[in-house]
Length: 138
View: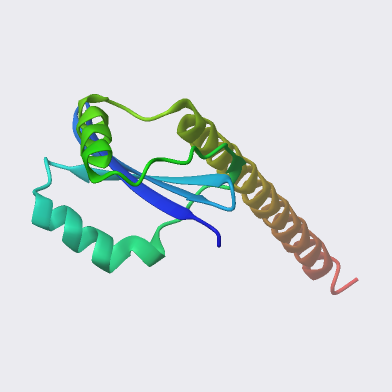
């Protein structure tokens, strides 16, 4: 049976509150970063997750080792309280976000290049049409 774990980390990144969704499945980590703006209340975060989770764009998967944790409820509670003290996101998550940024950057460059080429072609066609109109009567 495959284990899937998901985690939401909320932290203050001046001037906004940021949420980082981390999803680990098949030993691969995917991350999505969301800006909340003002400090969200618990019910607002819950509502956001319920309504917008499937619309989030996660980064490409990064291979990560997932540790097997004990099923002791006291240990789980201790680990949860430790994680509450940790601020920020992990390095693997940062790598996944960086990979997503790079992919978005290349995609943006490609679409920009295509738009520039289309505009050049349009200008060229317009010039050719004007040339033909000038020489129409002779």
